[in-house]
Image 1 (tube, rainbow, N blue to C red):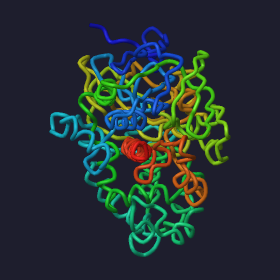
Image 2: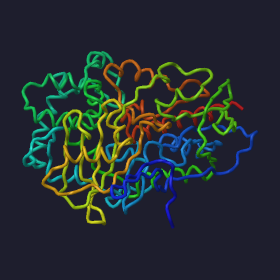
Image 3: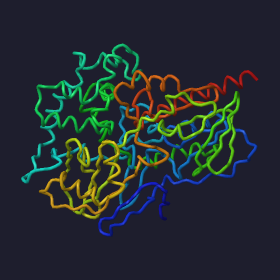
Image 4: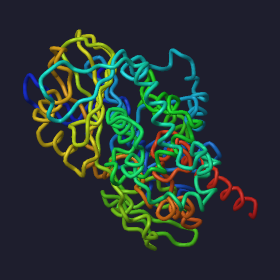
Length: 499
């Protein structure tokens, strides 16, 4: 049985120089049924990413009538799996870990916590070699370092990088899941950029700082001149103030069934009683006391007593909310990096390479070997305005040539055969990548978003972009979905108790 194709995702074949748009995914969905025009739901959930799926399921299982509305033709939002070439490609969010409390509780619910339920990214979990690459390399052999050497050197430089307070950074976020609990300390360092903090480290070699730089920019896919030092410190705090643990959390373990498989499990539980509409994005939301009316792109109108809107921050301004949302929810803060999957025609060692500023990719690593005697690589084009991301979209062949000329070790006589990606930057349902907050925004925009997302009794906003824990990660999405659902269920129960 063939896997249905979503409209999302792009595949470039080097052999034929052709671009195919729309890739296979088991997350593809169609609407459940025709919705009666006079039906009023207890709750409408906008968006079928992890936040929306979990919120819709939890509210439906509490006995409420729920309609799930998704503009895409699939579940998963910014986290979905393409299946082709005998492999599962995670096109957005990818890695999970038992240190993530909210997504791990979901994995526990569905019996997905055994070793067999996970795959490892070999270039991070079991790398034999690491290497640094310049944009204009001089001829000569690649300088490889073994993984143990890099880890030892990085452990020293990262301790210095995060030790902004003389106590390992621990006083800034004493309660990592309440990031503003020590507001005065956060205010003190909120304007500090990653670049400024790197410039303060004068006791380390240029090579050590370059390795650190290349690791840091991947977390936010944002230039270090804009990236927030505190945003990275938050992740470090959430990982128990351990750099090695943070790396393990961020790029080691992924789901054997893929994120689309996981999203399907959640959706199937919701669909026992819930209704759904796919491929019909919301265009307007009009809320009045006790009621909400939504206009969809097709012209269809849907009604409910309240909504949980899980659209990304970058997309909220595309919907006409009446009354209007506060300005913090309609001011975009997009980051323009990307993620690509490359297949090469031979097997190479498990490897992780890093590039200097302005490189075609900030990081390129071995994922796993293919059934075609080749190797799948995962790379992250940097967030240098829109340049890197646009190069992939506009001229994938040139992007591959630039990457392999300046980045790929010449000792390995390998050639790329395929390039697979999702253009998140021009996708109207994402308008950029995951939430990555810039310097000066934690005590301003983020504070307002995280504290004021429950706009009224009728309009609740929830998204990983302002999660209190792992902001921008899969766990942050699960956290926001659970939190919003619990809030709405309490509302409904109080209302029913009054009758």
